[in-house]
Image (cartoon, rainbow, N blue to C red; front, side, top):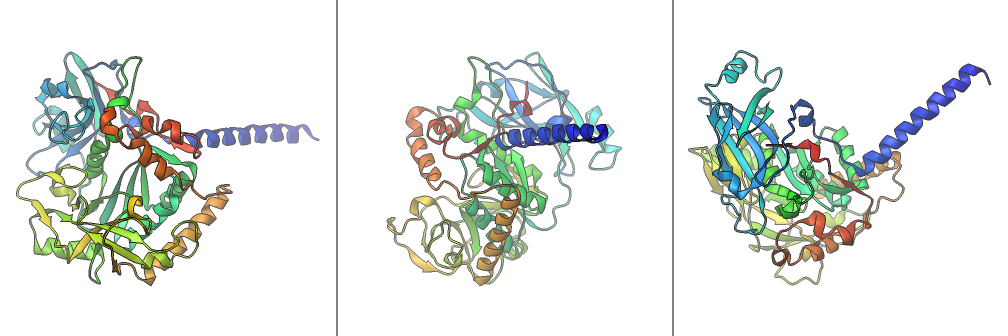
Length: 464
């Protein structure tokens, strides 16, 4: 063999080996968030009174003021400290409304929204002289108890005249990728154009399915990493459901649509008319121009049929429901929303408020696994929600996903159907144990149940 060919062969083998090594690492470690690349990290050690900074935004929804909005985790005593953004003292607000949160009082680390008016700061004048969004993020200095940290403020979407986006709270121990396909396709037929999916621990096949939708620019995956820790201090052990409240409010700032739904992958908001959800919302806001959010009543939903590994999706049209047995959910207008909770908007900007949608007009249909079995108790009645068009859309998408998975080298894509049951069991009685921490409580039962991808890059945060 000529020397040139031998050299080329060695180089090609090395390159191929590097690619395979990268892919093997990528299958177990979810990618970093891009925000880290724009951050100037400073070496503040993690202490009991530290604030763990996730992300900052430049908020100009109020045309008369420019605000710095910063999403952080911290212990409850942090709210007593004087925190400054530049020279302006910041307001520190627990996202859940109180600290500790009454629903999970033994969870020591909580979510906070920091707000400072920077309309008259020198750095803000620099931004005013540049096109919006700025060519580079505005940097602000945070200071607390002698410590400091400089972070960028990312621009808030300016134009939100139309459209519907969907925010999915952090997925943990999630492997039911066919349900994810059904969810995305049924919401798309209701008018949703983009999905922000926060992920902490998902199966490798689920990661590939999300990549399929990323390639279509339908899904943005937001890696929801574990918090920094050190010996003797690990905030992750006392943080309710991975700090999902902070993720909710991060999605308020990310979405470019006029309407945004915050729902789990087993939830569907469906008008009980011939209109799509987007059409319904557009009509509602024209009738109620001061609406800041629309609240939909809860209804249990059960699909009748073999909705497991079957390729027959006609079961989508076979649905029964039981109304009024759970918490509501809201679809909100981000330009009118200050603080978002799981089931409602906690704070609207004045003069906007929540509008409760009549149950005969539209409902939140919740297809939770607890009542998916045909012998589950309840007073269920037949309801026609989805037409042949929905069946065909799910069927076509499922076929395309399977083709994509084969090209990705996935030989057996069938999910472990026992995972959701194990999650329910390991989280049962969490209040007696102290705090709902799925990553720890379910590890022994689930770490071997699937090939998992984890979000563990705690370097995605900065410590103040």
